[in-house]
Length: 333
Ligand SMILES: [Zn+2]
Image (tube, rainbow, N blue to C red; front, top):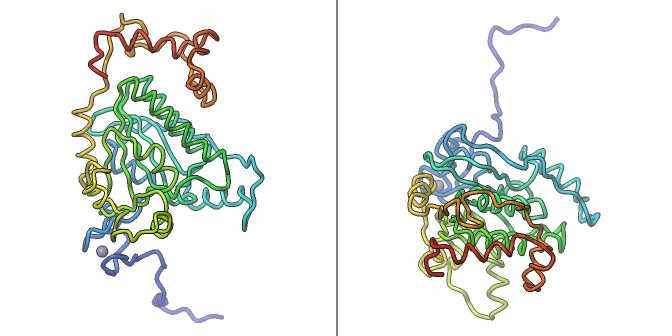
């Protein structure tokens, strides 16, 4: 019979996820404290990467978020296998993050102001953009245009998802054309670039905000430093892909610490109201356009390539842009 001791055995080991070492100041940080501080080092201000759900919690009014297209999920169109099959990688990422994909989008409020918001999660396969991430960003932009909600996109991505090959690269064109329609309908788009925003995401929607905000010291750029230096065969200055450098050179409008981000977004949203067009204007934005249906990437591209073909095949969307452009609310262009 085992002897029962009147005290608990001493714990020699602690759970490994109790502490995080700050990569900047090397201070050991208690995880619960770090979470409470929005994953910003209280000692030196280093901004750790933030999962998408926590980002939404940080930016939006409590309980205001309504997710859309939550069920969208990647398929494996190419049967891609590197060290592991792509579906296995997806399943592992889903288990690790509790997300279906590397982006979440929906509608919510920032200090009472309604927004459409899409947030990326670097923890899900490096925040890479495949067909689903691209589709979510495009749908967020389309819904923002239709419902006249300012759009906020928080990027954190290594770029296009190579496991989806060309289909991932096509997301660059798809997201950009959706944002172009958003711009045409005079609804603001605020892009928040967090660490890291690189590759195809920086090369498409992340750099296109009416206002581009970066978090301190975020890595922002297209290719890695070595590739960039090799391409132009020149030494590049230290920190040339960091938020502060990009701010000094005019590629980013503001560098805002995470704690101030929500207030800053609210302030900017107060300045940038979507243009409201009267109901009686033909094709006016205030009412949903009759017969409007979300455009697929290919049909839009077709319209752009052969503009004169658009009215003949009875597509309403491009025909309706005409009266809008000549509406009295149009100011310059
Ligand atoms: Zn630190």
